[in-house]
Image 1 (tube, rainbow, N blue to C red):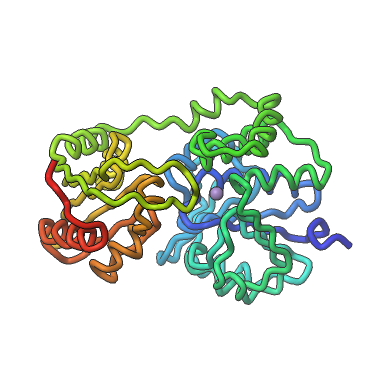
Image 2: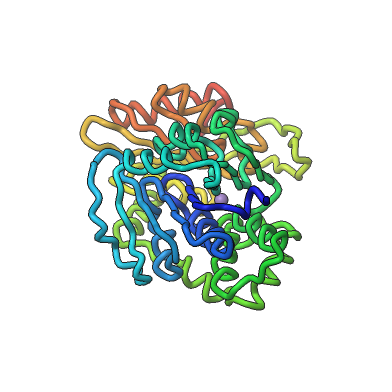
Length: 368
Ligand SMILES: [Mn+2]
């Protein structure tokens, strides 16, 4: 018996608010497993993000598709008309928990593109308690907390560009032909997770070349291209218009990656917008800031998004989540080069505190 292929019921779950790599992973996995079981359910905790939703309408899943709602206990079967007749079922989280609880040893749960149980949005206990066999497939390093899910098989490769690239290899391993639609899905996943191949490695390129014999790169780029709506474009432009600039002279440091690090001063851009602060912060970095801080306020709550380049992080080792926003308030945090905070505070006060923390770490900020 093959523990992966001999499956009575297969349930594929991905992370909350599925992105394109997550959706396309679920799509190609369900196609791969269709030969081994007719009974496939896919679960999308709290739905899909906007771009993944667009991909879903272009490549509808041919399997049961469940979107869980955080609290509302309803199930309307109305679907949103993804055009394949299966539709989407909206379940309350509890109903999915019951479903996972009914699984037996000959069922299989695959967790795709998800490295942390928190990202299962309340389903992790049910996965941990389920009698089904469990497998995880992901390109992010597995969080320590994931061990409590009790995986029978762990497929994690941090060198893979995307989960889709790992599923491509699974097709090879199972000696299965890749259809045009699956090639398209795998390309979409790779393009998204490599910033349109900007950070792709050579191994990924050979897979992309193979997929391009079946699917069109131009078409995939077209699906992923999003036109920003009016209000977002205004926010990005206003952020640039209102921007205050500072420079920080930092002594040249040894870059741990061995890249040529420049000795140019660091440029910090500070601005404020009414909405879309995350997009605005990204825009300022795209314009040339090493670090951007964009604040906005909603009632008595002030929000801020910080963004930096990878080069900024390599030069300063200043982690925007841990070293900056988590120090401003316990409500703040995030990644090394992208972090956000929402806190009950005056907008100017929040800006001041963030700049203070940065000053303490990097030194004097000179107005440009
Ligand atoms: Mn991914």
